[in-house]
Length: 225
Image (cartoon, rainbow, N blue to C red):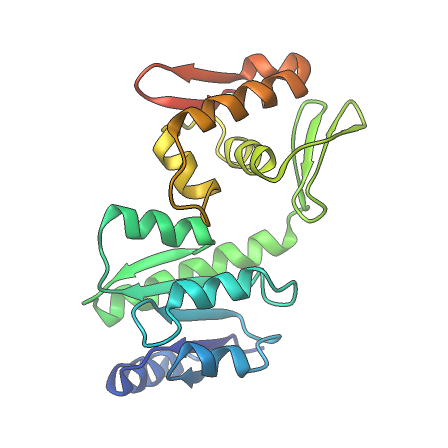
């Protein structure tokens, strides 16, 4: 069965170039010339969305937030296409839930390779369970529940976001700035100290596994396995 890709960009010529090359690779391709038009489509059978960031009225970031907040579209892979190339822009994109971030101008060959890679990862992810576990500590991605020794532990939304981030990327050190960008995506001004306070609460809640959350002065936090 062919993979269906939606291209969302307000540049007509670019959309046609992408449509031609993606169809040549065997994909079914739809095009939307605005964020509003994309959100009006039935996206239930969509395999991947190529989404421009800088569009009039509704930006690609805004569209992605709508998609991630909709249970029917939250798992569709999103690849941003954008001329916004700063580190802050990339962190915002990945914080919203992007699967890749391609900077304009790009080569068609690079884009095709990265689309193929994202689709391959998506296929694997769909076969994976919705839980992440370490020993007797487990989080359920769909229900947003945390359990320890089979018992449910109450977690706030931000605490869950931090623990999920650390468990998904065990042994990787995240700076406070990265954690704020990836977990506090909808808030403009949050102090670094907020991360420390939430980490302290998480350590207490997960009992013996609290010691697995390692802090390094000047670097940040990681969950060491």
